[in-house]
Image (cartoon, each protein chain N blue to C red):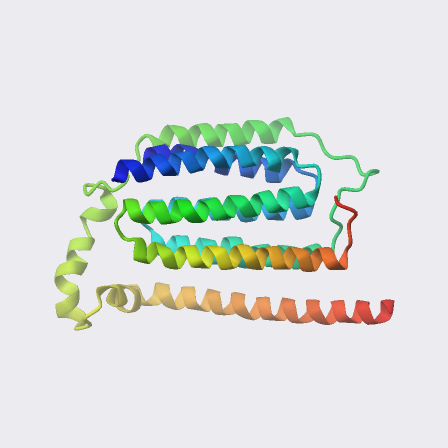
Length: 90
Length: 187
């Protein structure tokens, strides 16, 4: 079973490398912002998988919840900045 | 530790660190540093240090991102066109590579992860486990270590954290007041 979890984790890591292309190339700031958000969501699933690998998922659920909240709060702070200093996409 | 995941995560961390230095947009740099902290927290969690991971996620990715955005209010987001960016200095490059070489050379002598024979696990842990109950009569061993054996250390730490909290409050207080002032005068 652990092998299966590790396999899924590696698969997620490969998917993250694809998203990194958008972080590199994304023409606007919002492309990069959203792609970083997607990476954050994937790291959350990775964290839960690590919890299952160590057979203590209850502990890792708490951290993953904090992860989600902080991801959201960071996006909120950035949007607040962008509302004040408006950009035309860049 | 799961080496398959570690390989990917460490590469991601290096890529994010280099990207956040290279980009010319400070806001993007802040976003990338937030992602860096998330991956760092993931690595800590993978090493079994769940508490450190918790701290890294909340302080590194959460609070410091917001503080840097607050700092961005007082400066420009982009590099000005007329200011020439400095080229990489040769002496600094040589110094940094030498330090990296020394670190890589020494890293080989580190004990393996989770090795019970590592020096940190040999001489003092057993004493804590055997004697802390008798000497301090506190049921929780971690509390005994933090509050009794390392009492002065903890006192210093709490002082530092207290001062940091006060400074953050002061900084944020004046920042919001000044922002409000600017906003009012603009309208």
